[in-house]
Length: 336
Image 1 (cartoon, rainbow, N blue to C red):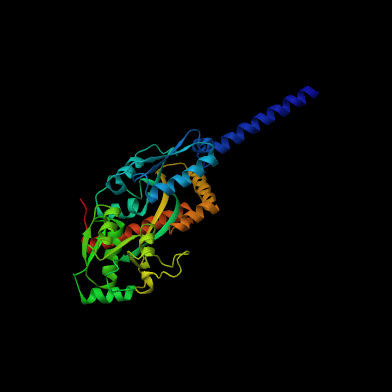
Image 2: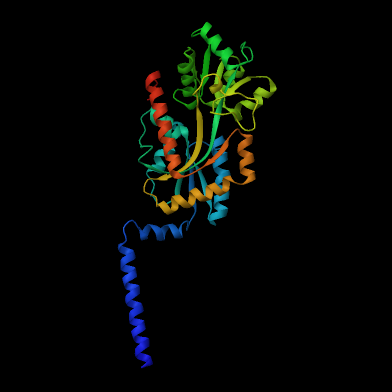
C-alpha cells in the first residue's frame, strides 16, 4: 500500500511539473532563451568600444567605468578605441555587432545626436541601438581671448551687436558640438560671428591662445587651466544650471534664457539586446557612479553623474537629435 501511495505521489508530481513547464513556456511575454542567456552573461570578456582615440575625456571615462564593471562581473571589460569620422566609424561598427551584450558602445552626444543631424551616417541612432544608461553630462565653457574687452555674456553680446561679422569663433570643426553651441548662441542672441573651423579641439584652443580667433565653446576640462593662468577668460558654462564645483561661473542661460548645449557620455548596445542584459548593465553602472572616487573624478572635469533608466536615456537622445537637427537646418550646416 505504501508503495502505491509513493508511486501515485510521484506521478502527480511529474504531471504537475510538466503542466507547470508547459504553462510557463506558453506564457506570453517571457523569452526563456534570452533569460537563460542573460543569467549566464557575461561568460566571456565584454568589449566597450570608444569612438575616439585614446587619451581624450571619453576614453578616460570609459576606462574608469569599464575597470569597475569588470571587477563587478568577474570578466574583463576591454576598452577598444575605434576613432574616425567624429565617432561615426565606431558607432556603425557596434550597430552591426551581434546583440548578445558582448559589444557595447561608449557613446556621446556627438555620435547619436549631432553626427546624424549634420551628415549622412550608415546607422539609425534610434532604431539600431538599445540605450542602457546615461553615464555623465557636462556643459561646455564659453571662453574668449583676454584681449577682447568683455567680462560677461551680456558684454559679449553687446560687442558682437556693435561689430557684426567682425569677430571670429573657433570650433573643433564644422558640425561638431563646439560649432553647434556657437550657432545656437548666434541664433538666440541674434548676433553674427565668422565661424573658423579648426582641425580638432587641440588646434582650436591653440588658435584662441594665439589670438587668431576671439572666442570658442570648449570643454571645461580643456579651458580651466588656461583661464586660471590668465591666458584665456572663461565667461560662462552652457548648462541649464551652474556647475556644482564652479558656483562662481554663471551660465549662458542666465543671460539667454533657455540656452543649453550639453554633451553626455552613455552606454548603448546593439538593438535587440536582451532586456535582462540592459537592466543589469544599467544597475551596475548606477552602482559605479555612486562611488566617491568616480564622482570626485567627474566633478574635477566639470562632469556630473547622471544614471537613470534606459527609457530616460532614450528620451534624452531623441530630444537632442530633434534639437540639433532643427538648428542644422536653420543654420544651413552640412558635412558631406
